[in-house]
Amino acid sequence: MTLALQGRFVGELPELAVPWKAEAAPQPQLLVVNEPLAAELGVDADWLRGPDGLGLLTGTVVPSDATPAAQAYAGHQFGGYQPRLGDGRALLMGEFVDSTGRLRDLHLKGSGRTPFARGGDGLAAVGPMLREYVISEAMHALGIPTTRALAVVATGRPVYRDTVLPGAVLARVASSHLRVGTFQYAAAVSAREGNVDLLRRLADHAIARHHPAAAVAENRYLALLDAVSAAQAKLVAQWMLVGFVHGVMNTDNMTISGETIDYGPCAFMEAFDPATVFSSIDSSGRYAYGNQPAITLWNLARFAETLLPLIHENSGAAIALAEASLDSFAGLYETAWTDGMRAKLGVPGAPAESVTPLIEQLLPQMQQSQIDYTLFYRLLAGAARGDAEPVRGEFIDLAAFDEWLGRWRALEPDPAVMDRVNPVYIPRNHLVEDALTAATGGDLGPLQQLLTAVTAPFEERPGSERFAEPGEKEFSASFQTFCGT
Image (cartoon, rainbow, N blue to C red; front, side):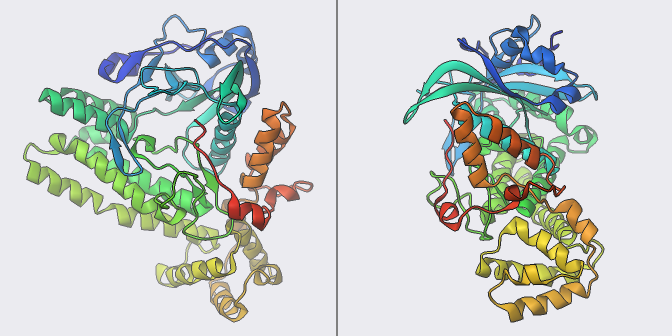
């Protein structure tokens, strides 16, 4: 078999794509293949293990109808605008229709230098590519929209960083790889050329692919802004509800589809603290856990700026319409967050006037006592079943927590509801690091065990207790993540 790949992006938007070829993989070896995803895509996992499949996964065997290309985009990186970024070490192999009729991208990461490499070698190491595999599959299992990893293939090529590491290519699947940065690049091109042709074609492409309801709206480009804002408000609320810290929320890492993308310096918060930062390069805390909603809105404002010439021919009117659209973000986010917290607390039907004060008073207590954000809600479900001592034992100010607990119990929380939305297992940072270190050395056992836990996160299983436990405080206090380049 082979995968029938289309070249829709390259064909419709050639100004945003540079046809390119992957570098050779001297000794390709499949490290992990996502069999459930392959089945969903209508791809034979055994074929992926064969020479043609490995060739596709590394970009070295290209189907006859495919046009691999590096995508162009710009972006604000930590607030500073970069006019030309693009896929420096990645290739869009093409689009295909999965078994459910959905159009998906097949995209490679670590496949070699492209014209956007900016001095980099275009390669990737085994550890960072497996990190994206683990975290993206964990996010999918948690019900959070995300790009997904189809496979990681070791290339047999060394990668030179602080030390010599084994190289790898990640094959991932997405609804698309359209980003806010894609629109920033197109808007800059359109401004230089004095017309909005490219920007309009990109916006129409995005509407057709992701937000078709906007096509019949009175102002389709304002409706596109509304739709992307709503998708991102829901997405970032889901991140916050599970304690996920993206770590590098640059505009080139925000999708138009509303899927999570780029799992470089990401990690999951353990002890609750809004100031939590893991990324080694985020010295100012710009992308800290508690800043994520505000940064999302900031990125959406950059997206809105690109659409202004399409929203209205009068710049003042366009700005007013865009600002009114963006003003709705806070309410959309707050609704998604509050609804999620109601479920986490087991009181989905409780009125806002009862739940909102509980949320507002709980989080400072959790921060004061350095409560593990994931473990807390499972212990609280135990309190809903009648045993409050384990969760009470986590708090410093018992009087304050007991007062909170009494008011929460008065709402008659349902522990079954809590168990359906509060995971037992997340990719604990110490376990991820241990698994990646072992895999880099050739032992995939710890990685497979971790994947088994985090891809069924709500089902408590005997013998898997260590996957539910936070890391040692000393480890967590000094833990840093890196972009993986």
